[in-house]
Amino acid sequence: MSYKGPQGNKLAILKTLNKGEFVSGQYLGESLDISRAAVSKHIKSLQDMGIDIFKLSGKGYKLNHSVPLLDESAVNQYYHALSGQQKQLEVMPIIDSTNSELMRRVQNKLSINSGQVLVAEMQEAGRGRRGRTWQSPFGANLYYSYYWRLDDGLQAAMGVSIAVGLAVYDALKALYSLEVALKWPNDIYLNHKKLAGVLVELDGTVEGPCHLVIGIGINLQMPETASQQIDQPWTDIASHSNELDKDKLVAHLTYALDERLAQYQVSGLTEMVTQWNTLNAFAGEVVCLSTGQRQWRGICEGIDAQGGIVLRQDGEVKSYYGGEISLRKEVIE
Ligand code: ATP
Image (tube, rainbow, N blue to C red; front, top):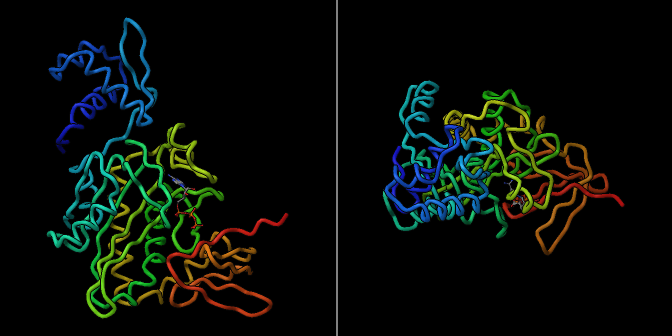
């Protein structure tokens, strides 16, 4: 994999530090053919990105923890071992948001193939739903988007985030034996803490082809600085497993998405509803649904055949649909 552009020197410094030894500023400067002042500027901006580099006078720079970087050819090898196929997969060092980049390609009618994957080491403007920020510090976590084209119109895309949640479940189970819980419509929890988020974005017409950009952020090893910006309980893979091979994770996630989306295309959610309901993070709990303007309270019964969330309210059950609805556990004071 080659990193191009102005970030190249930072990545080269990081790769050298990733070997785990002390490295002097002079050595870095000479090997990159830049001044020591330029080296220390790069180190400062890597630190600003949340990377734990410290300096010891007389010895140089060292990383507190190595930063797992993506390697396109390793991902392709793992993916091929799982699926027997090749995949169009691209790694970018820094981007505003992997979803935004794929959506720009769709909207600008640039060449893009269904099943294509884009991953980045860092997002400068990682997004959640409704304008919220997804913390995306450099190298620490996985920032991933998968483009999928559905030819059956917008209506057919309605249940996709359910299938995607199950794909994330499949990948994390296969790789780390983790049993995650799913929060409707788009989050992945572990021990009641948010481990990953899904953001499905659509471009299409009611009848025509529908372009879906499926964004997935999975926390691998969240640095302290970024974690302070998250205003709800969160967790990362490093808190539950020693296996932090990001390349393997990309391959497993991609394979799981291929499988679940193919299943979705053939039979919609028919074969997924029961399993999703066994993984429902809020099963039987009192929850509050909210759109910002309106709120509904009830007992969370799970999802229905279309992927809507079912609440029991005053003895009656009612389904709610829509990507912009937020579900939170009701806090009883
Ligand atoms: P909702 O209840 O509406 O689904 P949400 O918390 O799931 O709310 P999202 O839009 O899915 O909202 O995600 C954004 C929110 O997730 C942020 O407001 C923040 O609280 C939290 N968050 C941001 N970055 C991370 C991260 N890397 N890991 C875990 N949680 C994060």
